[in-house]
Image 1 (cartoon, helix red, strand yellow):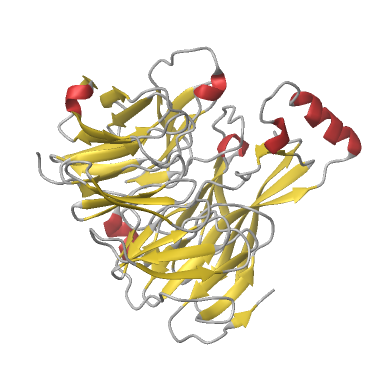
Image 2 (tube, rainbow, N blue to C red; image 1 turned 180 degrees about the vertical axis):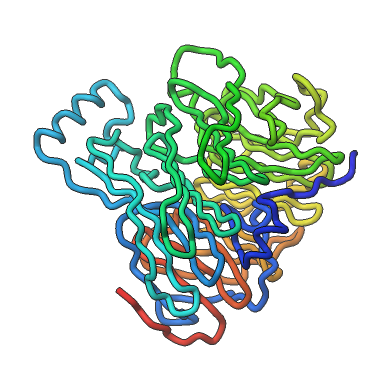
Length: 446
């Protein structure tokens, strides 16, 4: 195999110089790893709670951290009038998922900042007002894409409802942009920053493309259509994955999973490097991970698989470039986490699996509590798996299953955790938590 790839992520030299500790979805390298130490293994609403802060509105975006502030996006939902409600129900007529959709009259999309030390809410920036938004799936929200920090800028993406860039020093809105497409069940893909470009997949039911915006101005950089889709059902063409940029053999590659296809692009130009038809999967959520000479992707809904692709791939590739596929109890929503020569996944239904990352051999498979949407975190010699029932299972990495603790908080945990030295940052549907060892009962800022 070729040498292991190096996570490029978000121009780390600049963001680290600016004091950004957790700049994007899944951390500094976008792979679910934190260098943080002294993290708690046990907590509750009474134990090891530093602070708990109510966040206005609702959103599943994961926190990003820099300059002493923790940022999330959120959507304040306004109840629909009877006439608006009837119009939305009519719009969903014949939709097999109609009973699973959330109907609102309007939304206000915001960026919120909390002081990392005190938990005080210090910024609440109104970015977009949207009347008569499309219904969103009950497992999604209008603020599910995670923001990204780069230098003194925060980029917030709400899918077709708008993208905005904020000056983190004073909260000034620097630019706004529109990237139209029909998400069908709400937005999901998070933006990333590569050098001076913001890269965003726009994989809708109607159109599929990847766009790059200028970080300074928001003006279009490049736009590349996705490969042609088979079938005429638009809902089977949508996807919600977040790009992963890795340097492979000296060349940066933006690896983006979509329905039916995974494609690697030159992040500066949008030119394709390679593509693989991974199968019939769609509504892909997991972010790729890279290591051991492989690119690991998940194929999305239908029959989720974990696919290991040789990083030597070029052009339109086939199964000869696939090292292995694993089909049993793989995730449709949570991303994998790679720790050395093992890769760990948890299925949406709570089956955790450890695989040999070089062969795909199952090393162990165990049920953990609950149902999962958020991605696992590897930090301080532990793995953290947070579920939709508010529980986090803490597991010791290794080729033998060892459960260290199961911890309960109020509310759902749909966002992925973040970590800085001495603290875990968790977001529920109503609150942001800072958890630390020997923190006592903390302060509740409801």
